[in-house]
Image (cartoon, rainbow, N blue to C red; front, side, top):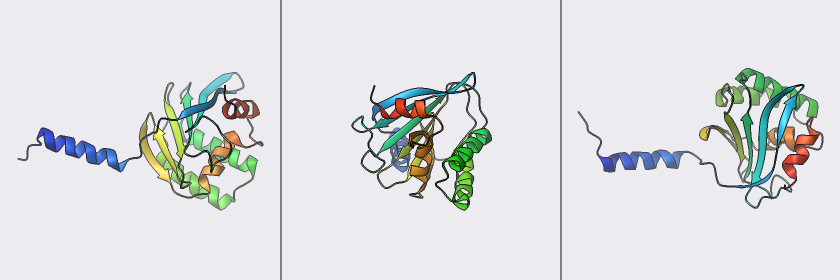
Amino acid sequence: MYRLTSVGLLFLLGMLSFSAVALPELNTVGQGSYRYLFWQLYDARLATPNGEFSDYKTSSPLLLELEYKRKIAKDDIITATLEQWQKLNNVAKSQQDNWVVQLGKLWRDVDKGDKLSALMQQDGSVVFYFNGEETGKVTDTEFGPAFFDIWLSPQSSAPKLRRQLITAQ
């Protein structure tokens, strides 16, 4: 029987921490709440290294954090994301379908208080976190702008939230 010593445990924990991208400490650009009809669905926060947002390239790493205010099934979140991509009409349907499959593997059902975070890195990839723990990464460099456009595009279906996110408070 093999016994793990405290040194061995520290080494193992260190190796595990190097395999995942940690959520960086970033400065809030703006924050707000998203409501649908009478229900508050989530609070959103946008953060960058300097607390300012100009565009995806110069503002990365870019963090969008959603703290949910009610229970929502993963499939409903994915459907809403797909609907927003279709409204924005800036990505081919075949690309959207591919991303939906990837999101199905990365996202989870949410409950009140859960946080889903997306971190767009300088290389254009997006790392997702659920309550601070990494769930996976989308490496397609077209995904990040298409995903963040749901909230940050001038054509966003939530213009009030967009203004709150991109304007320093």
